[in-house]
Amino acid sequence: MPTVEFDTQNGAAGTPRSTERSGSSAWLRRLGWSALAFCVAAALSIGLGFIWFVRHVPVEEVSLNRSADGIVALTGGASRITDAIELLASGRGKRLLISGAYRGTNSNEISRLNPEFERWVRCCVDFDRSLNTLGNAVETKRWAESRGFRSLVVVTSNYHMPRALAEIAHQLPEVTLLPFPVVTDRQRAERWWVGWATTRLMVTEYLKFLFTKLRITLDLDAGTTAS
Image 1: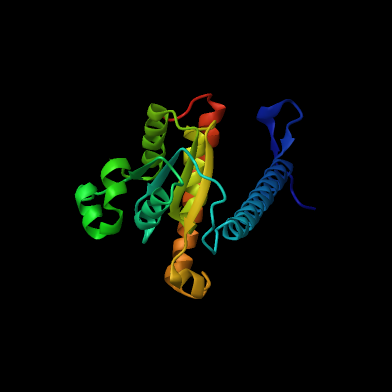
Image 2: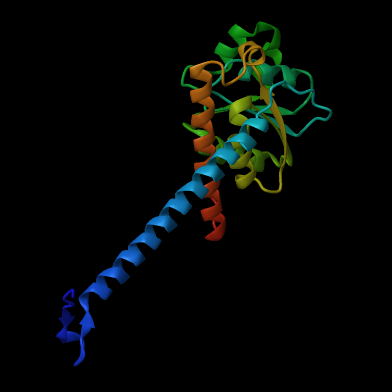
């Protein structure tokens, strides 16, 4: 007959130690299964979210069917500034903000590179030196509010557009945003999953988008917005 030890410190009758160990083991198993279920659910949510993100990344440039008060181009990708200046010259906005411009990027340099648009660059282009997408959004808010703009064309790379719109919409919730995604020839010709560099770019941008949405949600819950 097996011997059952009693813990006589837990009352007169005591508690069987074997029963106590069994209860602890069951609790640990339940905790482990709960953690596993949470990880699986989180991984599934992230995977489905990535599919949603990829499906919402434009694969073709759009033709704007209306104009806006202003145009904002977020630097960092090919053709963003040129496309934005072309929109300005075609009357799609009254002024253009080039957000996140490098120190050497100014009216003189842009006019030199785009002499056919010099007239518009000299009269109607502004610059800020923000360092990231959140900074772009904050500077865009200041620029738009100082000029009383109620609608903006947003020019950035297609993969960057979801995060850019989320940041700017958070800063300017009452302003209408018209996305103008820049799509390179390589992106048109090659699917994102074909090349490792493009795949890494999409995954990285998706993770940044998730972080942005989480930060914005926490800001909203706290009743505050970035200044």
